[in-house]
Every structure is written in structure tokens, then in C-alpha cells.
Amino acid sequence: MIATVWRVVGVGFSLLVILAAVLLSGASPDQAAFLNSSVGDLTIGFAVRTDDLTVVMLAVVGVIATCVQVYSLGYLHQRPASYHALVTLFTAAMVTVVISDSLFFLLIGWEVMGACSYLLIGHYWERRDARSGAVKAFLMTRLGDVGFLFGIFVIGVGAGTFRISELDPAEISPGVLTTGTLLLLVGVVGKSAQVPLQTWLPDAMPGPSPVSALIHAATMVAAGVFLIARLYNLFSASDTTLTVLAVVACVTMLFAALCAMAAVEVKRVLAWSTVSQLAIMFSALSLGTAAGRHAAIFHLVTHAAFKGLLFLCAGVLLHQVGSAAFVVLRRYTRRGRLRKALRVTFVTMTIGLASLAGVPGFAGFFSKDAIIDAAWEHARDGSVVGWIVLVSVCLTVALTAFYCMRLWLWVFFRTPALAGARGAFEDDDATADLDEPDTSKLGDAPWVMLAPMVLLAIASIVLGYVDGLQLNWGVGLVSTALVVLGAIPAYSLWSRGADPRPVVLEREFGVDTAYHGLFVVPVQWLAKLTVAGDRDVIGGYVRATGRTGTLLSQGLRRLQTGNVQNYLTAAVVGVVALAVLAGVIGS
Image (tube, rainbow, N blue to C red):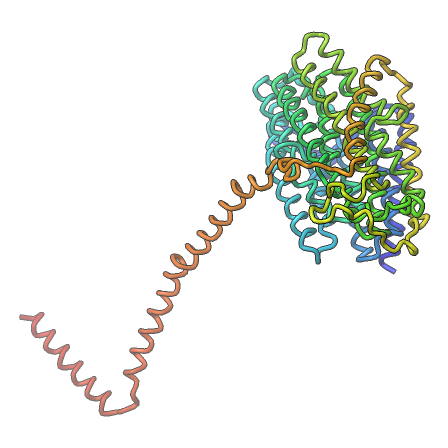
């Protein structure tokens, strides 16, 4: 009964968010403040605002949350009450961030999202990888949030207000502005899994697939892009912050794309893809232009559609097959069994991957081209940052096409190379494709799971045309050539039954190992040293004090023999001793 109530509440709240976006779409921008209090010259309180960015984000959050809630009705049956309650709270926290016009009010939603992500990633708490992934996500995002909190204080005190709509970079000293925006950027890097705080997102995959769709598409990681877009007047006024943002974004997009090229599990490929795509959005924002901001938001919207779709498709593979690992799925591809059994999943996932890769005609093609066009225009003006962003995004487009084609082929098609081919995923079994598991009971997911996927598949095509086809045909031809350039090597390797993965990519550049040696091991040793100091030093004094009292009590207890003669003898000796002492003193 409780689970049913929360299911209804979850779906109802998500639909309410969509309704709010619809009702606000034609309204004039407005702000409203409440619970204000003055501390010296500062006014601290809460406030909400409505504008075009608010409406767009409410629509994205509402649609993705509704799809996730409905999809979960058929996907998840383990502890559904707590799950749907947390997803609803997660959605409400993101809505709070979106509508906030107060840095403190925004901070509440920002932190609640972090707590909900920890609980949802660890939903299958009986699994060790889920527990460790949840703790890792919580710690790394909290580390970034320390800088975020200090950034709020620096900006608020420097501007004399914590109201976002009243923040004017002209009234903030350049040093304070740069310091505050860099501190805010630390929180954004943690929340959106950018270098160097990127490793938590791929390790969050043990959580339920609908949760992954919500985190990657509309909440949590997307909150960082939204925050910079919301405070764009501050960030664009600091050249230092924009340069740092550009460097972080360019390094992250290439780093994550290379890691995705070597991942051998569907959800992990998609997780690294999210890190890379978010970096593309940040690179557009780092241009500091109106066109860059518009392109970043446009890509955020299209990315929400196709990345949410892809994670829901991965959930179907897990739900119906039991695994989303390439080594398992490729055994179902003989004679097209997986494609025939999961027809809707195959079609919708194909659309999602095509949009992610930037295939012409799909939504991702138009939004990525908008970013490339904005970078090109900025580079033509002589900007070094513009050239760096342009080259990085173009390289990432080719790498994205490679791992999208690789995933699509290995999951749904049998390689023509069988006996005698190099083992792609199993070193000791080069003919694994010859195995044919039982597919008699394999079928597509229930309609309650397929309906959200079909809706998002349609959005992954249609959203590209919402912006009015403002396409630079020269940029479009270049990006199309890059897609082809990336897809051909993936097809060539698959056709030969080979999937070479350099050790450095398979180990994801060894970042986790390095972090373990640099941070985890010293903290563990420090913890052991602290425990030893508490046990052997402080605890030693405490135990010694107790032992001394015990020994004294034992000595006094021996004097209590119960023999009257001993007591009289002790009394006489005492009296004589006192008399002698008195005589000595008197003389």
C-alpha cells in the first residue's frame, strides 16, 4: 500500500513539474522573495524566479522524471516505497535549484541532491560495489561542495547580496569575483564529474538504471551546467575563470571519450560518455559569448533526451538478459536473436546512439554543431580559448562516433569473424560467438517500460528542429566527416572480431589507482595512527588511573581483617607515634 502511494505521488509530482513549465512558458520573468533577514549591510533570505531558463529546465526535469517514474513501475520491485520517495525528493531538489533566486536557497537543493544520489546509488545496499560507489560519489561531491560553499560566501559578501538576480559583476572587485567564481567552479567540477573529480560517476553504475538516467540526464550532473548558465554574467566577467573552465572542459572531454572507447559494459560506456558530453557543454560556456551559452543549453536539452533514453535501454538489457556486459550480450547476437527479441529496445537504442554520435538529422547533430559553430566564430575573432575548444570538440566528436558504433555493433550484431579471430573480450576464448544461449524466453520489456523509451526516442529526433534549423552547413559537413572518420575504424575492428584496448585506456589512465595511493592509503594510515594514539596513549593514561585506584582499594581492603586485636594494636601504635611526633615538634 505504501509503495503504491509513493508511486502515485512520484508520477503526480513529475507531471506537476511539467504543468508548471507549461503554465510559465508564456509568463513574464519575475522574482519573489520570502523569509528575509538583515545581518549588518547584508540581506539574507530566500527567493524564487521564473524566466526562460527556468521554464526550459523545468520542462527537462519534469519530462525525464516522469519517464523514470513510469519506467520504474515495471523495472524495480525491490524496496519500491523508499525508491520512489527518494526519486521524488531528488526531483524536488533539482526543481529547487532551478527556481532559486537566492544562493542559500539554491544550496539547499544542491545538497539534498547529493544526499539523494548517495541513497539511490546505494539502493542495492546488499551489493558491495553499490555501497562503495555510493560512498565514493558522496565523498567526492562533498569535497567539491566545500569550495562551493565558500564561493557563495565570497560572492555574496563581495556583492552585498545573495540574490542571484541582483548580482552585478561591476559592483564586485575583480579579485573577489575571480576567487568567488573559481570556488563555485570547484563545486561544479565535483557535481558534474569533471577532471580531477570525475571518477565517481562511472563507479555509480551499480545503482538502478532509471536512477542513472535521472542523474545523467536531468539532475545532479546537469546542475553544474545550469549553475554556470544561471550565473553567466559573473563567470563571463572573469577571464581567468573562463580559461580554467576551458582547460578543465577540454581535458575532461578527451579523457572521458578515450575511457569510453575501452569500456566493456554498456552503462560504463554511457557514464564516461556523460562526463565527456558535459565537458562539451562547459567548453561552450567557457567561450563567454551569448552564442556559447545558447549552444550549451541547447545541447543540455538534447543530451537529456538521448542520454536518458540510452540508460533506459541499458536497463532493459539488464532486466531482460540479466547483464549489460559486452561479453554476455554478444552471445545473444547470433542470427539476430537479440534484435528480434528486443525490437523496440534495438530501434530506440539505435536512435539514442545516433543522436549521441551526432548523425545528421538527429538532435545531437544540431546541438553539437551549434557548439562547434560558436567556437569557430570565437576562434575567428582571435581567441586562443576558442581555438582550443574548437579542436577539442572536433576530436571528441570523432571519438564519440567510434565508441557509439563500437557499442552498437558488439551489442546487437555478430561479428563476421568467428573461429580463429582474436578474442575481443575473453583472452582464453576466441570463439565465444559460437555459443548460443537459450533465447526461448527472451522478449521485450513490458509496455510501461517501453512507452517512456519511445517518447524519448521521438524527442531525440524532434528536439534538434526546435531551434529553427540554424545550421552552418560548412560546420555540418565537417562534423559529419568527423562522425564518419570515427565510425569507420570501429566497424573495421568489429568486422575482424578484434577489440584492442590499450592497457592505459582499459585502466582508465590509472587515475583511481593514483588517487588510492595519494589519498586513500595516507588517510588509512592516519586513521590507524589516530586509533593507536587513542588506544595506547590517551587510553593508557585512563587505564593507568583506573588501575591505580584499583590497587589502592585492594591495599586498603587488606587492612580490613575483622580482627579486633589488630585494630587495637594499630590504634595504640598510632597514638604512640603521634605523641612522639608532638614531643619532637615541641622540643
